Amino acid sequence: MTEKNNTKSPGGLARAKQLSAESRSEIAKKAAEARWAKRELKATHTGDLQIGNITLLCHVLENENRVISGNAMQKALGFSKNSSGMALRNFIDNKLIPFLDPETLEKLNNPVKFSRVGSGGSVPETHGYDASVLIDICDAIIEASKRKILSKPQETQAIFAEMIIRSVAKVGLVALIDEATGYQEIRDKHALQAILDKYLAKELAAWAKRFPDEFYQEMFRLKKWSFKPNSVARPGVVGKYTVDLVYERLAPGLLEELEQLNPKNEKGRRKNRHHQWLSSDVGHPALSQHVHSIIGFMKLADSWEQLLSMVDKVYPKKGKQISLLQEDI
Image 1: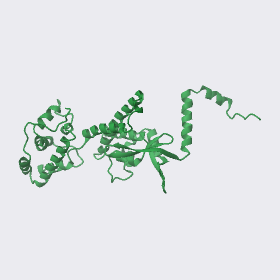
Image 2: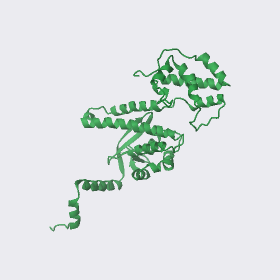
Image 3: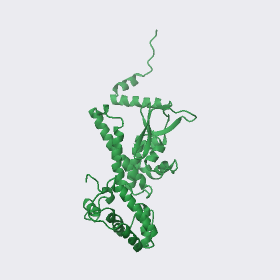
C-alpha cells in the first residue's frame, strides 16, 4: 500500500508549528463556525425570560449560540404592541447607527435562521439575533439619550434600555458568583429569574411614570397656559401645585417625611422624585388612585379656584401620621 501524499506544503507545516495555542484555537473556531453556517441550525432549548411583564422568548442553538427574535427585543424595549414589526429596526437605522460597532451591525444585518424546538408546519424556520445584540442596542440607546438626540417618545426606549442593562448586569454577577463557588449545582433553576424579577421591580419603581400627561394637560388648561405634549419644560410653580393637590392630601404627615428623606440640594433641586420613596404595595396604589381622582375633578372644573374648592371638600390637607413610606426607610 502506497503512502498518501501530504497535501500541506513544508512551508505550511512550519507555519502551523509556529502558531500559538490561542491562534490555533481561534482558527479552529472560525472553521467550525464556517461549517455551521453551511447547514441548517436547530434550537435545542427554548424558554421564556421574564423582564417585567414582557415575556422574552429565547433559544439556544445546537452550536451553543443564544438567540432572541427581533420581535421579542422590540417588546422588551417598550415599543407599543401596535407598533410596526420594523419599529425597532427603523429606530436603529435613524438614531443608533453611530453608536453601534461594526460587529453588532453585521449581526443585525445577518439574522440567524434556525428551526425552533418542536417546530413544524409550512414555516418551521424562524430568525433570531445573537442575544448580546440586545445589550449592545441598549448601550446605544442610552448613549443616544445622553447625547440628547432622541425624541420625547423615544426616551421611553431609553428608560427600558437602562432597566434591562442594570437588571441583567446584577443577575449576571450573581450567576458568575454561583459558578465560581459551585453553588450553581444546587441552585433552583428558577432562582435567577426570581432575582431578575426582584432587581427589575426596583428599577421599575425608580422609573415608572406616576403622573399621567393628562394631569398636567388639565392643570395647564385651568391655569390658561399653553400645553405642549412633547415638551418637558414646565413653569416652576407646577411642582408647588403638585405638592398642594397630591402630597399634602395623600396621607397625614407624608409631605414632611418626604421632604426629610428627599431634601433639596444647594441648587434647590431634589435627587429623586417624591413618589420613588413610596412603598409599592400601599404608597403607589394610593398615589395612583388619588392622582386619577384629582384628574376627574380637574375635568369638572372651569377654573383653578373651582378645582381647589372641590378638592378641599373631598381631600382636605392631612395631619401628622405616616403610613405610605417604604418599611425599610
